[in-house]
Amino acid sequence: MFKIQNITTAAKQKQVLILPDGTSISFSIEYIPLQIGWFIREISYNDFVLNGVRISNSPNLLYQYRNQIPFGLACFSTIAEREPTLQEDFFSDASKLYILTEAEVADYARYLSGQV
Image (cartoon, rainbow, N blue to C red; front, side):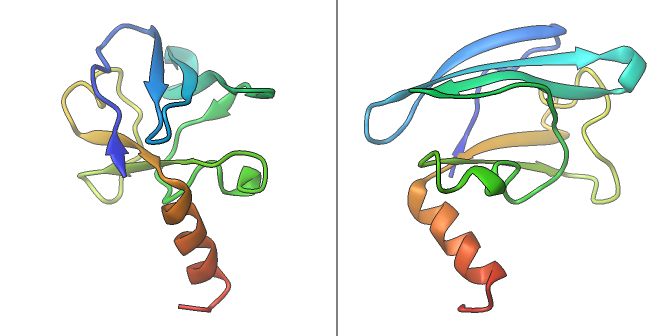
């Protein structure tokens, strides 16, 4: 699990994230005040593109795509009952985003299926 660094308080942000195998993910997020939350504007990896997903606390926001991409995206907040709803949540580390490795995605899938 690798924490996504350098998320600021800017409403629109874009980063290129490098996976352990050297491939890259184009990742852009946006804070939408009227929705009171952060959204994935776009994640692209090779031919895979995902747009418009709300970022919420989850061990793997991208679980349903586990057969299409070799990574996952986890979000955790330090205050258990609160989602990342403030513009400064990622900057202040009140919430954190992580890229999951392929092995971690597989471990989570086994956990959900009761094999762990």
